[in-house]
Each structure stands twice: as structure tokens, then as C-alpha cells.
Length: 313
Image: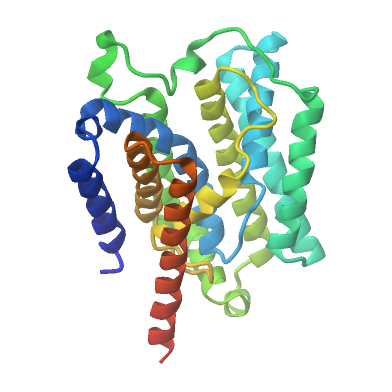
């Protein structure tokens, strides 16, 4: 039930809106739109999954996405390289932010919540500074097609390239968590950090690595955000970190650490997108969407705590 719960929830939510919502909801065009909207939250949530598995948290994800989108635009606008260079620059910017967070958490021995809360403001300020507090235009390249609707001649792709990128990154992240030493160490640290340390796990180094990897994924999310807006915007993705954390928790991840799967995280991200798309097509106001999402998050956390109490008993 723990594994199938999120999938059953996704199926139930989609079926509800397919029956109650407008006819346009149950169409391939709407499914493509849901996939496109999920790509941004889902990509950032992959990194958050690894962090939460290790018992950490990162509140700076939204700010890193904004900074990375600005970096992409500035790289293209300044003629410093083509799209691939811009992608590499965004990933590097995100990885650097994650490296700083991980280093501060391990060296200062400060709670991740506090450090990343500070980084949220610091990185957001840096994004506004280098963007001169305005949107940064950039010449059109194939990057803008990553999350755009597929034209008739490219329908064979089924979904836009950005969604396929999410799928590839998800497979890579799942492989790391399940089949590598780093993945085993993340679960060990999240389950019991002191025991992991006594077993020879380099806890501090692993934490720095996972925050760096998560930052790089947030940087790639910034590329997708740039594709969606076609500009670098230092004010974008405010509150994205809450959606990302919610996707992990709804998908079965535990804020206590030691639990979480890539499949569950993606399902959680899709559940949130389906709810927002369905309520929007039904003409419900935005505050209703926020209430429904908030109720689902609280319910997911409550179920997780109830399950842990049963296991402890």
C-alpha cells in the first residue's frame, strides 16, 4: 500500500476531474499540458528527494531556479556561448549554490532549515542583482522549444523535449539511489546519522555532494523555466520550494529521512499538477487550488507520522 498509495491517489484525482470537469480535461492536449507543467516541479523535486532521503531540507530551490534562468539569458544575450554553454552555466550556478549550502551545513553544524532559509534570500538577491532587477531578454534558440507545445510535424515525440529530459534525469536519480554507494549512504544517514558515521560513512562529505547535485538539478530546472518564459526572470519561482517539498512528501517521502523514491516523487508532482489543471478548467479561483493542495500536503504528512508511530509501536 505504501508503494501503490501515491499511484492510486493520482488515478483517483485524474478520474474525478475526468468525470466532474469539462470534456476538455480528458484529452491528449490536456495530458501534454500537465506533463509540461510537471517538468519544472518534477526536475527540481529529484534533487529534493535525495536531500529528504538523507534527512535534510532545502528552501532555496526556487531562488536557485530564478538565478539559473537569469544566467541562461545573460549567457545567450552576452554572446558567451550557445545553448549548450548556457545549460552548463545554469547547472554550474545551481551546483555552486548547493555546494555553499552543503558546506555551511556541515562546517557550521547548523540546521539545514536555517542555512537554506538564508540561502533563499541570498540567492534571490543575487539573481535580482545580476539581472538588474528586471527580466533579461535573450535571442531565440532551440531552448525555448524545450517546454513549448509540439507542432503537428513533431507529434511523434508525444511530449516536448523538456519532459523527456525529466524522464532521463529521473532514471539517473533512481539509479543513484538504488544501485550506488552514494544512494546507500543517503538512506543510511537519513535513517540514523550517528549509526551511519560509526559504520564508516563520510557523513559530511555525502551531505555536501547531495546538496551540490540537488543544486545542479535546480539549475537545470532554471533552464526549463527559461524555456517556458523565454526570458530570465529573477522574480520567478517564488514558493516553488514548497511545491517541490510537497511533491516528495505526497509521493511517500518522509521528512524524518530514510524514505523516498523517484517514482513516488514524480507521482506526487503529477497529482499537484492534475489538481491545479482540473480546478482551473472548472473555473475555480486560485485560492481554492491552494486550499486543496494544502489539505493534501497536511494529509500526506499526517499519514506519514501515523505510519511511523505504528512501526515504532
